[in-house]
Length: 260
Ligand SMILES: NC(=O)c1ccc[n+]([C@@H]2O[C@H](COP(=O)([O-])OP(=O)(O)OC[C@H]3O[C@@H](n4cnc5c(N)ncnc54)[C@H](O)[C@@H]3O)[C@@H](O)[C@H]2O)c1
Image (cartoon, rainbow, N blue to C red; front, side, top):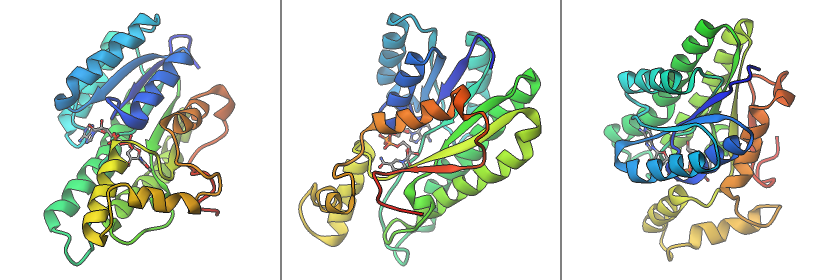
């Protein structure tokens, strides 16, 4: 890979995305961190922290479901940081609802951020990488839900199956350009997303806040919920020289919950 390595991370204001940005900064990348406009305070703070450790970093707000926003994100990252080597399409949302009660609007909203957002991010990154002619790494956020669906999150699972499928097709189409395309499939990572999901599931199934997360731990062979840093480690690997021969995969990292 090129000396000036630049990574873009979406959904970087918190959770997994923030841990990924920090890890890639430790790995020596210059980083563009991106998230929704509503998170700009956290995003600016993260960019400031990365800059303080000597990394060139830039905060760029963008909605990944908006084509013009995603194209602007990549264009601004390239203009300010000098290119694009790694794209981490991490942004995503989840909600809980039985399929019979799921509104069409909610189906569209989740598919729009998770599936359309991944497509727009992958495509904009690949166009830039092909133009540069030095290959690159595209890395998406799948999930264990991309390998096996669960009740009450059918729309989320469908969107993550879409990410996994997109990752396979993109890997096949862009291999000739030296671009590898992979995804990470976490299990239960304790972030804002899971606290919100826990609340929604408890509202549907009964119980107390925290019950769903606590109830899942006995089914995790490694005996604890996942930390964002666990996911950042696999992203670091996927972005590294060691992963040069890996493409088209959605790598499950879930403490052993789902064995394939
Ligand atoms: N937490 C888990 O257990 C888990 C498991 C499997 C997969 N994932 C996936 O990992 C990714 C990160 O999850 P997390 O747990 O860190 O969630 P999180 O909610 O903590 O962070 C997600 C970030 O994405 C941002 N975002 C939401 N919609 C956006 C949009 N339209 N455009 C740009 N940014 C947007 C949010 O503002 C937020 O900062 C998601 O794609 C999620 O589906 C998470």
